[in-house]
Amino acid sequence: MTATAFEGTIRSMAGKMQETVGNATGDRMTLFRGKLNQAAGQMQEAYGNALGEARSFTSERPLTAVLAALGVGVLIGAIAAGRR
Image 1 (cartoon, rainbow, N blue to C red):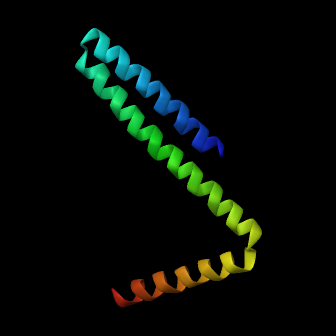
Image 2 (cartoon, one colour):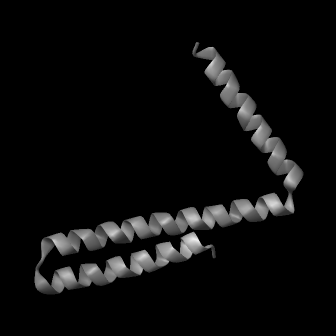
Image 3 (cartoon, rainbow, N blue to C red):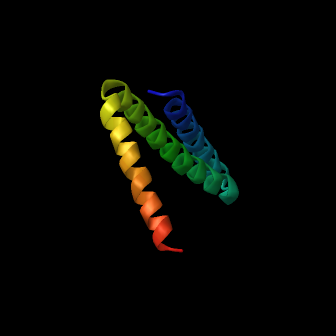
């Protein structure tokens, strides 16, 4: 688990607590912010996990990673050249 994924997990948990407080007090804004923080935390956790997987892949298969990056660069260049 990367630091980003861990931070996302913490943010999601804090959002859940915030949602619980919002429900208990009847404060709709706190409830909404709690749900928003949960969603943001889940996205951050997913991003962190994907980042960790990408790092793992590039360290295990550096040549494949370089060739994939080169291919993406060529593709972006071709698309950009076609728009002129």
